[in-house]
Amino acid sequence: MKTALRTLPPEGYVEWLKDVKERIRSTQQRAALAVNSEMIHLYWQLGRDILERQEQQGWGAKVIDRLADDLSHEFPAMKGFSPSNLKYMRRFAEECPNLHFGQQPVDRLPWSHIIRLITKLDAPDEREWYARAAIEYGWSRDVLVHQIESRLYHRQGKAITNFDGQLPAPQSELARQTLKDPYLFDFLGIGKEAQERDIENALVDHITRFLLELGAGFAYVGRQVHLEVGGEDFYLDLLFYHLKLRCYVVIELKAVAFRPEYTGKLNFYLSAIDAQMKHENDNPSIGLIICKEKNRTIVEYALKDLSKPVGVSEYRLIESVPKNLQDSLPSIEQIEAELSNGD
Image 1: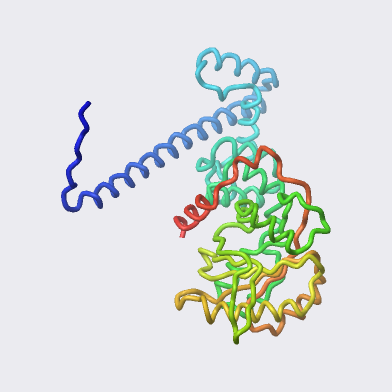
Image 2: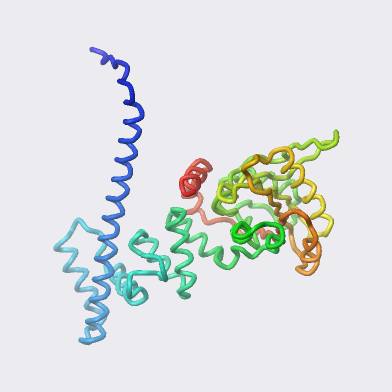
């Protein structure tokens, strides 16, 4: 058996090959999007036709069963013409008359995503928000369902912060929208009386799910990160870097109600991070205290004259993530690659 010997490539070949590979992948992606777009348009047209004939010509509901049977006989290899799917097409045309969820073109979404958006959400603004996020971050169907069921739309940007006074616009608004309240640690499988270290250990053990809950842009740096200041040792609970905010994010976990003194300690940590770790091109580091509960007035007073940007949120320890979601969550590498490509 002969072994093929490969000679050294000519000058410039490696760079050219990389470019060719990128063009092929780009073409494959565009082709897949084009196929998906054509199918979504077909489904919408079928739904519109059914809707119009039922409304204008008085066709009954049984016409859907007949159409499903006729199309299945004519196109046996296609699986999208079941009675239930045709009913989804009808609802799709009814609730999305211009092929958009608000400003978002629906033909950029897989059909399974569209079904979940029209069956799980009634408010047009929520549908548009989840559609945009699914397109922007490449959510799978199960991740989309999880985000809807965890009421992400109602939690995003709800943390109490002092960002408006401590960060320049538009950085302050982007940072504010990055944080949630409350955070759902339902995937940890620990009791509601868990201690801080128990929660911290569990979060690190489930870091991929924690990154998903934190949201787009968070890259994990480490836990119990060591800082030396004035000859003394200090340890941060959790340290992240946010790829879009371009700054470090220090997270302190508190398994008790918020107390004003927590902000002073975090303010100190942020000063140390900015002095010892922050690159000259990084934005100011921000802090997040995630506690068991909080009094809004106390938090607002504690943040009012603080010199560093800090937010405060609560956490919830509730039932576990559904089993069907566990295998569909992206890895840390996939999340970071996706987010860095989106910058």
